[in-house]
Length: 70
Length: 270
Image (cartoon, rainbow over all chains, first blue to last red; front, top):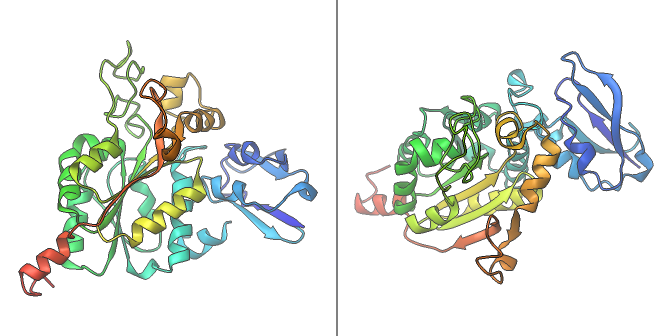
């Protein structure tokens, strides 16, 4: 299984990763970081194919697709 | 944080100053991927102009110059001529490269000096507040053209080819993998390589031209406005209206400026 790790300091909550995913793995967490940006979270990690599109599109290099559990 | 970011970025300068959803960061990620795959971080010399795009070299833990507005290419030319073994990469914006630095750009392309110029095209002057740029679409509303832009935009890739660039490619921020491949080709290309990347600017283009700052919708619109070069070759000019071709648009090998200069000086240019 793949785990999506989001750096909560670097993320600016643009939502590109959520829109980019073809398998609806990511969604909004409902939490905000210290700067007030909405944070995305992996809501359906079992659907992740590890294609890495979310990682490649992230403009803040805040997202990593890793092997194993988060 | 991303593995590549961990490896190559100056962590003290991050998070980036770029607005949420700005495509420039995606370009930085794709560039780091290309650099990582080629393993050329120690040979790099990055030059940035002024504008949001000019910030990208600053984040990379490599030799970096942040230069005057429009003059990134002249600085890079000097750098390449005095240190020919460097892989010189210029990050510039559409205003920086085509307006104030337009003349430098065409002459560097004409000389075919071995460098890679990455032009991030957001269609507006983003950092200074949304003024009309030479790449703003016809009839686009900006801060300085509130009744619509009466001018036609530049096609930067056609300009580069006409001026003599020997590698010309165009991608969008929605094609990070293809962009990384183009960066790899450009870094290995012995001559003037020009890559135009269409990026979304939610803050300025979004506000003035699209009526809202939605990076997801803007990126989708940019993706819909491009067609692959192979398909574009089969389309009529009417079908191509308002669309741009993406992919490797031009590639040739011509004598390179630095090598010519060294040969001329019998090696004295070193």
